[in-house]
Length: 181
Image (tube, rainbow, N blue to C red; front, side):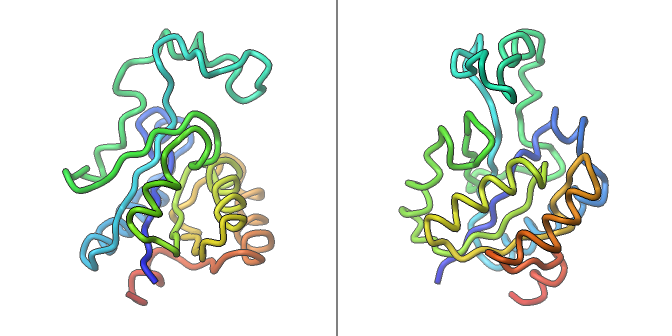
């Protein structure tokens, strides 16, 4: 079975607001391990067209995005430079919380013949939870790198990684995953 590492929402503006040095270090270590073992790395970011026409005002998460996008620096949605983005890395742009929503992720994964996903991301209660649920419904095998996931609420992160995610995924540290390759 072919696997891929999804590094989700580790983009400049989100890392600055919600990221932690520990989470970033674990995620970059996972990327290094994946690259060393020939595992595809897909970086997922959330971004909108100028004016954010995809963001309905009725959407609680994205409703205020039109105003925020107008004042946001263009590099805010770039993948964080700590990852050293390479030409063979794939960047997926999504329009909602899940990495699958409004993106071509599923098509890319089929093209790469990927059946196992390894997840890292900000926030655990956002992109990681939403992507995990959708990926499970799409019959992907799943691994969550608990220390490469970050959430603004430590207790929510703990409950998700210790109680919720194990129902649908293996939950391990980035170091444990890397040593299993």
